[in-house]
Amino acid sequence: MTTLFYTHPICIEHDPGPGHPERPDRLRSVLAALEADEFDALDRHQAPKAELFQIERVHPASYVENVLRQVPRSRQSGQVHLDPDTALSPASGDAALHAAGAVTAAVDAVIGGQGQNAFCAVRPPGHHAEAEQAMGFCFFNNVAIGALQAMEAHGVEKVAIVDFDVHHGNGSQSAADRHRGLFYASSHQSPAYPGTGAEYEHGLHGNIVNVELEPGSGSDRFRAAYRDRILPALGEFAPDLLMISAGFDAHIRDPLCQLNLVTEDFAWVTRELLAVAGDCCSDRVVSVLEGGYDLPALAESAAAHVRVLIDR
Ligand SMILES: [Zn+2]
Image 1: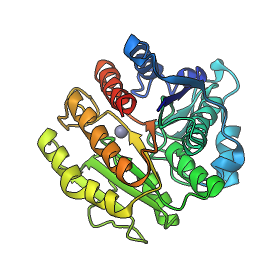
Image 2: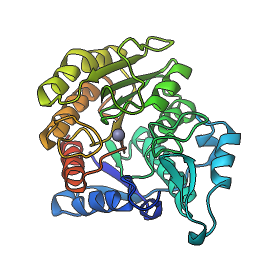
Image 3: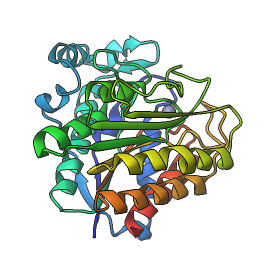
Image 4: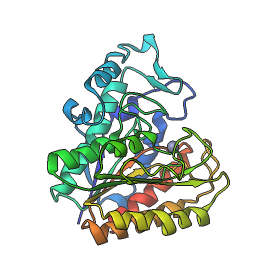
């Protein structure tokens, strides 16, 4: 069956400021890599804006309104910082709405049977966004908004988010604390930003799995984390839909952290996750771009990930 693909040109326009690692060229690089002939099979869609009520399942209306109200109206007014790392430019409000909308549309389509799985090439990223706090380059928690779309619009009982971004997805873990049917598993460097995600954090409902990887960890430790901890817990949870926070900043060439993954590791983990999805949720998978800051490493890792989604 088909792999669906969602993006929107406005996601390139979001500009957190000069020298910022979460820059427009990240998405340009991913889109360029996915222009290769081998990706002709992707069923490509322009992402709609998320409806406010969909975002408000994760973030209070007052927070959503506050973020959108602070979007600067013109380039001359520069960026508006919501935290030291996280800034709005004139296009950022629409970019954030389309990023979340990509994920809700992908969830609707995969649950509706229009595709087997989906990849959302979006920015700003989302997994650090707390219910009432923009942080870590993130405003709205795209993947959590997608998970809640599955649960509340489609009556899906159990959704799993697996997050292989090098950073812990503190905002996604918080969402799992608020929803018993939402499982969250993360492999991440520790110590590193944002400092959350200790292995003893299992969540209020026992639905959270964290694996800390010390700086310098490479393929062996990463794969052991999945083989020994995350994949068995995911299989035991047996989700009805699997979502992936696909960050590629654990790559050895990434400048933000010190893990030593190679591109093939991202293909490997994708295959392993799809195998579990095949066993428990009829291969229904929605993957969402998070981090990745070395442009060539990001592009080739995202391509390796999407290649596996297509081959399924
Ligand atoms: Zn990251």
